[in-house]
Image (cartoon, rainbow, N blue to C red; front, side, top):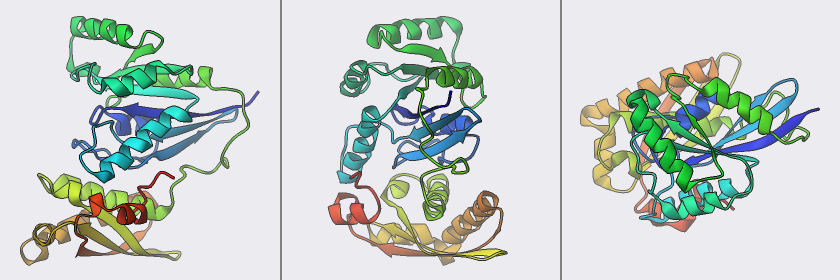
Length: 293
């Protein structure tokens, strides 16, 4: 008997969805930083065993949109409710369970298995955790509640065992050697964007989009040209930094991570361009891959 299914991960920003995804898939598929809105797309990570295929899907954090890019991000999260065989709803020990009640209401209507994961349990005590479990049980009475710590791999083995039990009988959806649905260029842009999230503060990381314009691979080397798009001239100056030092740091750190990711030497060139107000431009958002259609 072979099992296969889509296991979609949803929840509010910054609760550890991408960290969990990476632990379950066993590869660094989703970038994970301490800043909210790190994940902007649905990203699949595929786990293959002899008798099952689990297609995990990481989604952007659920939030009330302030501009069109966030509207598209919310559509990615909502679409995860429609095509899941199993839903992992991730929360943590500090967020208010009542946050984004509209989305929770949609989750409560689902007839598929819902596993409610209370993450970061190493940051609380037993009594607080017990109270949280009670509150969540009241909000999502049909969900199965599992306390975990994705960062410390606590409870993730039990979670994986439960997912395998709940998977429907089905043939595989993807080839056995496929790890994700995204092309190599996607991970290049994500890794560069991760460095920007780490090294710049305030609004800068959220005004940035990265597009890979050249990806040429041979046996020894991958040559990559990528453009960092910002919304304003002032942001371009900040990204480049005094005498180009800030951009050079991003380039160096991204190159190191890319060499680890691809297992090859990387030649990386980064450019910075201004694309005014791209986060509210439907045409640009579609060009950057945000249109879920």
